[in-house]
Length: 78
Image 1 (cartoon, rainbow, N blue to C red):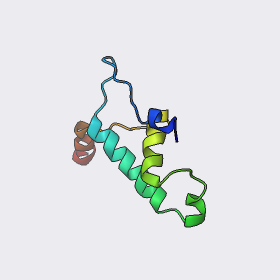
Image 2 (cartoon, helix red, strand yellow):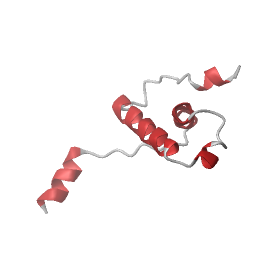
Image 3 (cartoon, rainbow, N blue to C red):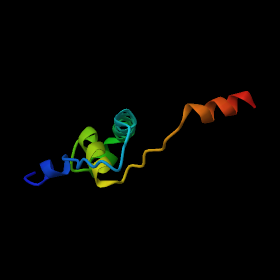
């Protein structure tokens, strides 16, 4: 656990702007899906599902898909 706290630190950079709400929403959906797994499947993870989702996000394994309101408005008008 000594080095695990470093995985929680996220580097801030000016070039890449990410929507923090989208990031939190994605991590919470991933944590919820991990909680819905059976106990035997969850036992393979080292950490609890919430912490596991944060680690996966910081390692880059979670992909945040951007959806805009314009796209949904165009689809509903057709």
